[in-house]
Image (cartoon, rainbow, N blue to C red; front, top):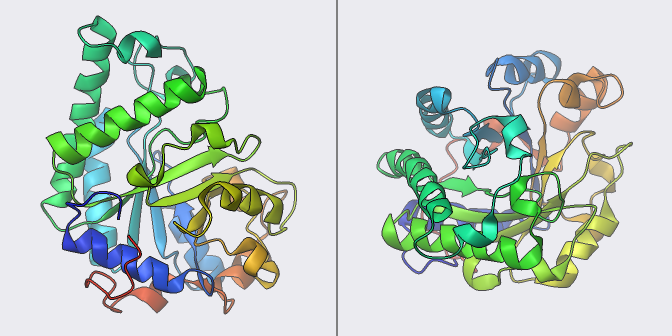
Length: 308
């Protein structure tokens, strides 16, 4: 793993993920913070199964206690937890719309500025939430600054250099200051712009991926190839967000996604995204692993396949 001090839980999960890569794909679902059980209930109703991977978001500090509880409960059921952060512009406020407002990243990357203090204080607050999970043995697929190579979020508005500065600042702060040894660092490009200049390097990345909200259920092989051209075989590659679930019959060596993670609300159940039959068939396919198939399989034990 990238962090030499990674704990046994993170190393065990990472080794298990490597053992799956190229042969099986984890089903994943991002929860709707406003109705956290909604997507899970729908998937279970139409397929009889649940996703292996649950996505949660630190978008709303008022819900952080809820995020803690839901992440811990999912881990205890045998599922895998991934967390992202729709981080509102540090100088403006929280929420999705504020994550699209700008912030002076250049100033935040300079020592002693008010912008840096704001940024670090907010990083530290989220670090405390991740530490709460660490202290309860929960490994986390940590996916910060998602879609950084697009220009819609503030962390993507300042080009490759600005992004790499943000990533390295958070990586150092979380790993070395807060000793968050439960994190597996997931780097997620925007699929429209998989640009090597944004890559922080293997020393700060454990899993790479890209996302795009496609118009069909294809395998997104060109996007997989674009990521692989940058990271090669050094880290597994995931589809870190999606609308239509890729047809599992189309996944092969040219699109060996480690997981998919369908976004919530209409992106899961909209008629133009996934029909109930398509969700059912995906969740019952041989390629895709569901919660019942991974629970109790010792995924938190440190394995022999750790490629880190």
